[in-house]
Length: 287
Image (cartoon, rainbow, N blue to C red; front, side, top):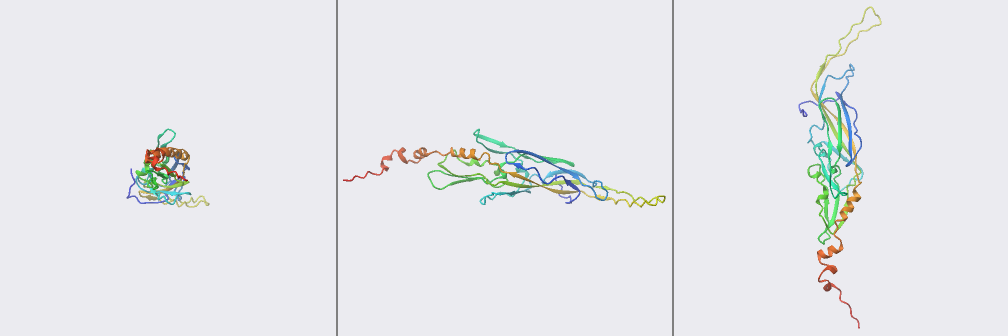
């Protein structure tokens, strides 16, 4: 079943056992779970007469209601996304595998959907889409105008592309390599719990026993009828950035510089130019 827009939003009929997921780290596998249950009616100590029929993260996979809040180090020149969807966070992303001169696939996160009360298990690996503030500059074509390559800052299909695929195989000089300096981000998820209502008839009153003077009348408990509805529980998670490969990536980018001799040959200057002698400063003859 999918989220039912006609169900009213309520509170207090369902519970979640925690509101904070385990701290995760970019590109590293993690897992955690939350438990959804029917709440207890304080009037009679019994569970409310409802049946949970669906629990899911967000009301559908494409709703942009996952909130991303950057932590310290977030650069002012990066207009990174603040609202995204689980449809993007669950998709794989290819990153540069410097050690093997190829690409590595980061699988994304699996978001649970269950059709009853119980445990919702999260598992997977966060991709670089959470930290979209990489910036690389290089010079080429014998000019002083820098070529700037940045990560796509939005949580969409383009944001899943590897930024290093946009860098040429060679250039004159690498002038800046700034991997996203954000230390961490906090994600806010919304667990939607959809339930079918029901009726608890309550407990009838029990009169006192005249043969037992200390006995008192038990007034019983009133019945309750609950219509269909849904509730939202908020869960947050901190995700740490992962700078482990930054030095390797920097060295990889430096290997793309073509060097002085190649530049001399490419642009026709220096002693590699066939007309080099014409450019020499004439020797000053003094008498």
